[in-house]
Image (cartoon, rainbow, N blue to C red; front, side):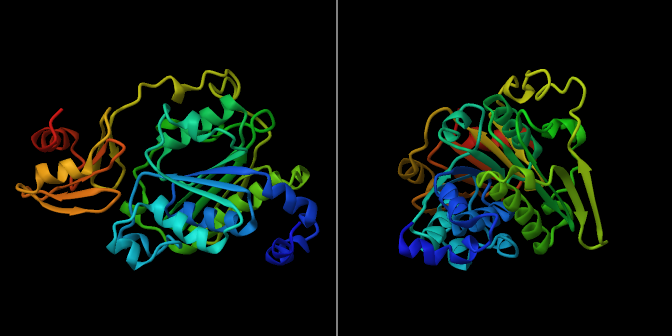
Length: 339
């Protein structure tokens, strides 16, 4: 191992369960982090500093002022520039560790693009804020035999588990798809330390797995409430009878029709995915006479006279911000974008 690597990772390698051999294993591994918000920035920060060979991050959103309370890789300049989270995180992390490969990809994760995002990946980490995407990741990971590190944080509560196809049950064995409570960070808030702890629990299990110290894996779904001082470990020794994913290999999330219109939970935002890409330059010319525009290399923000806002991305996504009403969103979309 080169001298500068020995120096960079010296404290980690002195920790005997990792050592020089474990460090070399980390350098040969590749991970995918889905969501680069609160959880995702902590996950990426730890894994890049730890020397994981390739860290690929994907996120559909851009940095806003309300993110700065808990999303540790972002600052006020990122907000001013309306930088996509994946781009801002990639920039920061490349300045932290130039010896690993860091890829920030700005897109929405779908059934169609997930197989490509998973190419060459050893493990997937959940930094998402919705169960629809989590179940998609769970099902695709179990179908492809890739471990999935789940994490969730809201209010002062957190949950985490590492699901390993063939060795543990899956996310569906513990959480039902229909159990959404509507409790999100945007509706009931979240405190930053919860996020750090959930993500740190995720990362520790991931590092154990990547350095192949599998006997040290926790093997539980851990949930806790920091404010009320509770912690609970649920053993992951039994799969749910007839679990459609890990027992019956039906993978329900891979059978669902991709919905091109989605409500971003608790965000007063509807997303519409177009089949064709969006030329930001062309659209800024089209819309400049009817709306107040802000254009960056990554997106076009359109403040409508009606009060709502459109955000156009080159990959064909349009966010309608200021409403959760899908028909209202579609009306504004067809009024200004057509199609």
